[in-house]
Image 1: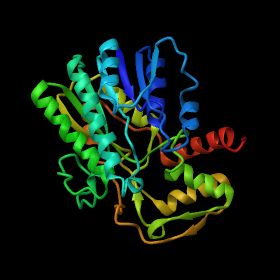
Image 2 (image 1 turned 30 degrees about the vertical axis):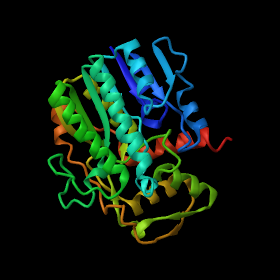
Image 3 (image 1 turned 180 degrees about the vertical axis):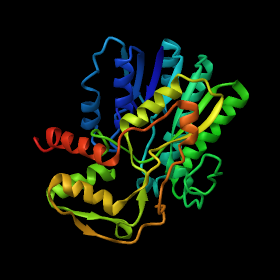
Image 4 (image 1 turned 135 degrees about the vertical axis):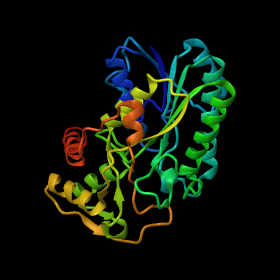
Length: 318
C-alpha cells in the first residue's frame, strides 16, 4: 500500500514512517523542517531511512496547497496519516493565527488533495487536549469537547469537525486519533519527558506545576504507532478514537522515576498550573480496543527507561 505521511520528520511521524517501511509499505513523506525546534533533530530522525527504496521524501509545507496537490497527483496514496501540525498547548497561546494557518488551513489542503485523488482512508492526528477541563473521567469520545483551553486544541477540534464534512459530502473514511501524552526517545525537546531528563542531568531548574499533583496519561510511541497503522488499514467511516494507555501517572511520580534512572534529584519549583493546563488526562480506550484491536504494552517505567538509554547514547555523548 502507498501511504502518505505528513509531519514525517517529527518524533511520531518519523517512527511511523520507519515502521511502515519495515512492513513493506511505500511511503510518501512530507515535512517542511520548520524551526519550532531544532531542524537538525528532525533531520537526525529521518537519517536512518531517508534513502530507503520505498520512500519518497518531500521537503514541503502543507500550507502550499498547489504543492500538496502535485504530490498527491503524482503518487495517489491509498491512505494518509496527517500528523503535520504545530503542537504545544502553551506555545500556542498568543499564536492563534499561526495555528489556524498550519493546523486548520494546512489540514484542509491535505484533505482536499486526498479527496481529489481518491484517497481511501484519512487518519488525522488529534490530541487529548481537546477535552479541556472536562468532568467526565476517564475521557470518552462522546464528550462534546466544545471548550478548548488554548489555540492548539481548538485547531485540532476544528480538524475533527472539518473531517466530518469530508466524510458526509465525499464519503471519505476519516479517523481522528486523540493522542494522550506521547513520548519516546525522539521526543521533542519542549516536552516533559526529554525536558525533565535533560534538566536533571544538567542540574537545571524544573517547573513542576501544582507541586506535581497533576496527572497525565503517558503513552509510549510504539503503542501510538501501532494504533495509527491499525487505523490506516481500516475503512471506518467517520470515527474519533482515543489512543492512550488508560493509566494516568501523578507528575510527582513521573519525575521521581526519571530521578531514579538518572541517579540525581531534580531542582524543582512548584508554581500553580496555568489556565491552559487540565488537572488530569485519562483515556478511555474501550473504543480503540474494539475498532483497532489496540492494546498498549509499554508501562511508563519501561518507556522512560528506553528514553534514558537513548539520551545517554545520543545526547550525553555530544
